[in-house]
Image (cartoon, rainbow, N blue to C red; front, side):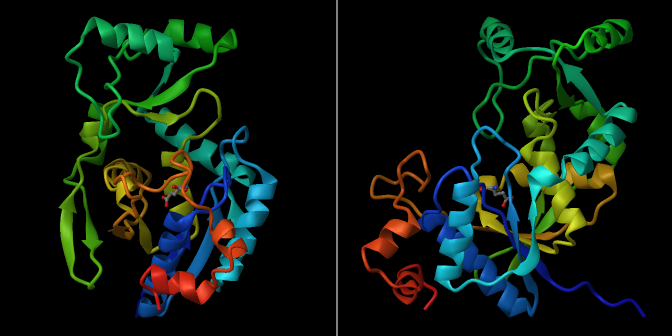
Length: 289
Ligand code: GLU
């Protein structure tokens, strides 16, 4: 008899600033769903960007979440300690001809894209990669890599879709448990970067590898990552990983309608705390009384 896996959720902040109300909302959504499913909640520190992430922000994450009354399983996974796991996945995909090195700088790409002004854009609004390094011969590639030139690894979307070989989708559930099947549309991302030029991984591959290694069955995260899930489903299929279920929750917005973020200077949880707001009051304000 096979037993179904323990429902496993994760809250996965990046320690590049203090947690704000949007993070609190996401953490509480994860707590709510974990409780409803009788599952466990993990905390993952997404600190692949070593220039922007800081230890003191990480310490503040633990402090703020504990203040909010959240508890999570130990040990906490810190992505910076697992670059070798991401490298294995990248090597696997590269070995199968599904990733190719791209030597272009941002300026190179901008020049090529400007030359074709009607270039379609990916769901984040970035013009699709014009394919500059895609057809480079094996010799030139090897030579440039051997001479120490830095390259990003891009997915060859056509090859990857052919290798996945099936219609991809996922189960998306809403606030009230109702669920629907969503068709994944990874092609919208074009030949996306899966291994960055400046660091030996990317958000996309790290999140997919970690969700697999940690046995995550239910991904609860903001609506802003809905389109990224198409790319994640493709990577999961290529790597032979099971698909989690997803719930992309609504985003909290400021008065001007902008989503709360560090760049819009959203109020930090710790500022509210310093103003005397209690954790219960914050939970109530966010709809988690
Ligand atoms: N680290 C991401 C963030 O802070 C979340 C990634 C995810 O939940 O998949 O926005």
